[in-house]
Length: 282
Image 1 (tube, one colour):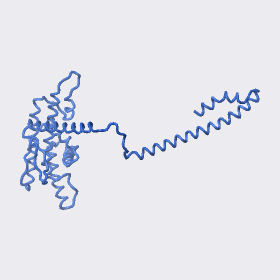
Image 2 (cartoon, helix red, strand yellow):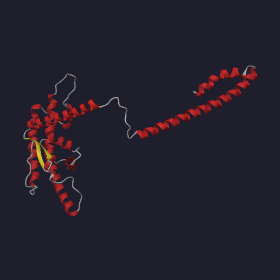
Image 3 (cartoon, one colour):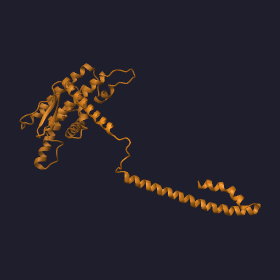
Image 4 (tube, helix red, strand yellow):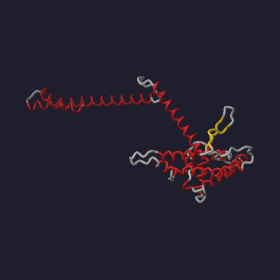
């Protein structure tokens, strides 16, 4: 596989962020490759499965550490990667179909940065076919090591595991070509967008914009902060009043001395000094 023009690596990198067992498996395979740079990513996935099988056996019989996932999960993991390959290729294809509005913005650049390469639009399907071929080989290789399984679902271009009410699992949204996978993903995207629009519209049509804010869990803290602010303000007011009284006393004494020396009334001197008191107290 030519990893420089394959959607597998960015697909595994994307899945590694999933908060489930597939995310753990993807991250494990990427760690193995980081430790062994010369190994191809698909080989790292196979090695990750081998090591997980050993770890799972040791955990079961010798109380060793738990594996990142059960070995059987690697079969579905490869399907999840193939699903993501189709998803990324669809984004790549849509980006290259985006109309050029003449504003200098390349709408395909974001997906190009994510996948790490750029190809002509008419080559995308061929790359997906190549990725399916190589991932199918990995899927078969892993399956060969699980002779205890009576039935192994074949790898598809797109397939999702769905749990029924009786607890059994089936494969749904199955596609056996890239074109069929794109159709399924488009339908799912449209359905999701429609559901989100309905939810938003439902909220917008029923919200009471005239209603007062209800109490929240932050209300006690807000009340406390307001009380503290009020206390602080009262302290400032008290301090200002104290300073004003002290200054008024000093002005009264000073006015008396000045009045006696200048042979003018004490009230006249205090009137001239009154502005000083007001400025300090304000």
